[in-house]
Length: 570
Image (cartoon, rainbow, N blue to C red; front, top):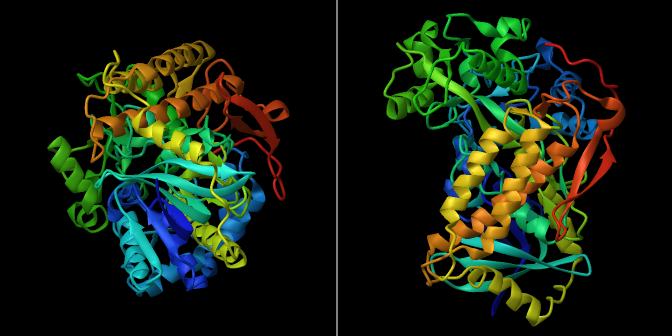
């Protein structure tokens, strides 16, 4: 097999991946950097981030990094590591200013300063924004900045299937170039995994079709532990029936939630915050309203509540929420200037991910992870809106710095594993499935999505989770029988779908196993059979290790440096 080599391989080209690549290039101009993406570079899911990026930018008006850290810890239902939260809030204002200097068109206040809007769970207006296309403009700014550095090589539309590790040291990855059909080894001294989340394991989700958890799954298969994957965030405002994200900024700008009886129902659930309560609280409130018959009936079964922006007026909607208006008009044929938007909770974010330390380092030497693919333990049991893009920027920078330092000290490339190991990795792509199988990856994926939607959603019970785990393991047994009719290597989407389905099934098993074991309700993990938070037994992180019989679960303590857990009220 052909071998190519680069000092640092950045896997994923979203916000975290691009920020990491830029930082490596800035810190080590001699480093040979590869950016590998399953899609064309500006098609990463980060462009879909809409509402804002949280940072303390107005301390003179009463905000503080300690307050941002406290909001993050409380929002996380005390499962986040507090040293991580403090590092995060300290670093992110510098990232906002750096993007400013690199040319991002932040929305402005009348005095010319960067504007900020309210977001759920934050006690201060700290979401910096660029209209409602924040992620797109952040991505474009990083992409433009990356063009200044000649030591970066792009591998667009390349699917990475396996990580090569020997003696607990990173050696390389196995790459399938979708456009040429070539399979090759990409050898490296360091790897940064920044492949994003895995919410495409659900049917009703805000995520792009490409968000299939590839990086998490390949790390898990390579022996790295996954942390806290049972905590899946459901965004309260997924557009019905498509699931497209209606940004939290719609509520930050003053939107109201109404049930079918015309009640602004959040008063019953979070009177002090109303529509700006944390996402887990609003999602549970919406589902409670719907289940109690106070939602609107949808023929698809996706009953909903209304998000009403009409009182904001046309000028404000067109200035602050132009994309939301366009999405509502294009996909639901309604104009939010005149008509409320139908919404319900949609799978939106994986709070867990590849286990890392505070620097984004994994247990394998030479491998870091950043962004949604990683679990540095910032978001705990529930992420606050606008903290995710901020996390991508902060740990993109941190992992980039660490990788740049590491490769500078490595004078030579480590030896690759044996040829048989490499050949087996290639075979796991092209010989994993057969044209004679009796199963369809599309059918299996649909069974998985239905199972996760109905059995591992906003509310959970042991009975539902046990049934979900049984179904997932049945699907897992049938997966080797999947039929792939296309025998070609060039853009074989049939094969790619089968591989992505494999990843989603693997990760779903971890999600459900962790949720079944965690006998409490905390943040986004709401058990109807264990309705309260149990700090005595469950104030700890879940670590999942892959075995032939499924995930083996271990636990590790939460780092508490400033605030002991208290009752979470809003």
